[in-house]
Image (cartoon, rainbow, N blue to C red):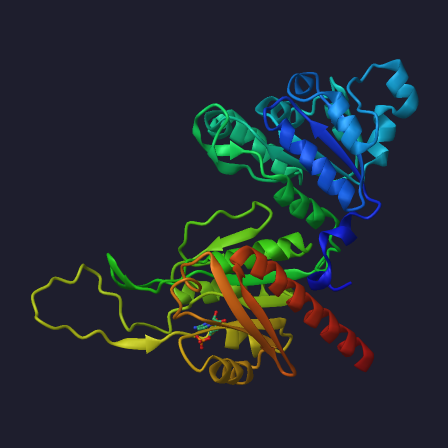
Length: 415
Ligand code: C5P
């Protein structure tokens, strides 16, 4: 199955989705979510907590889902039709939307005192939560601690988004809209193309010290590398990210090594490179570093000073030259002659693929949330139109995975 050509429809066809609705004003959005999932071929059953029924009636969800709504753990009639264990087994995925602070706390505590928590505890299906609450409740340490516990159990967290809240506050805590939720849910069913594959990435800029307070660096934000690392994680890979200085969030399921200089980045890459299947070099590594780092801050006495620079090691070329090399993907950020320079790098560094993108456009590239790219391999060229770095990252990982898998097959045939 080609990830790039699949729409959400394929992912939901005949899938059993159990929607848990807890007591928040965002419960009305979940009505639309049920409609979207039904439109795309899913079977939907709904569990509502007691407080959820204060916001939206069970009848609404029954009418939209086409199934009776489950509300009680100890209802003999409901248990006879489909008890909590059957519901737990029925579900291909469980999504709790909205998930209140209270429901997150109960799930984190492993409680099973009501139907929803009991089903979650009894099910082996993937669980996703769409938190929705007041911004202060969301940022409260107690909620954040529960969030970490839930994440560490591989529970997916969808959102929350930031913005105007029902209570009048502005901040993080809004439940995602039904369309976004549907897209994220589809990812739970996507074929895990990189499952069992070990991916290492470099990302961000490097800093080359001049003296104890100054350094040479560049405008790389790290956004593209981090997005690709998360896309690889979503595709089932185990991911190691060697990152230059940047302040982006990273999933705790990614093994993160923070470095500053190119020399430190090289050392971190070398530590585990022999265990890696795919190496993706997204970092904007400084090409040169000062020959010597001054021990003390340079004083501004002279009108001119000269800084002698020496070439940094090429981390990607080093990895590509290893005897048991991983599948190697490079990036070429160029301001001109994109295709020519990218193809030259593909050859000179002996890469399997190179992702070329222009960095002279103000609305995409280095510091932006958007990017476009052209990917070259020895015998293919693939264009990716401008889109968010997150979306582009998913598409790039799809392409990298299909090339990697094809290469593996060819190698096997020759053995
Ligand atoms: O030669 P150039 O710097 O344009 O090559 C870019 C590619 O090589 C990127 O993938 C970058 O991460 C990688 N690179 C590296 N080590 C360097 C310089 C570049 O890994 N010292």
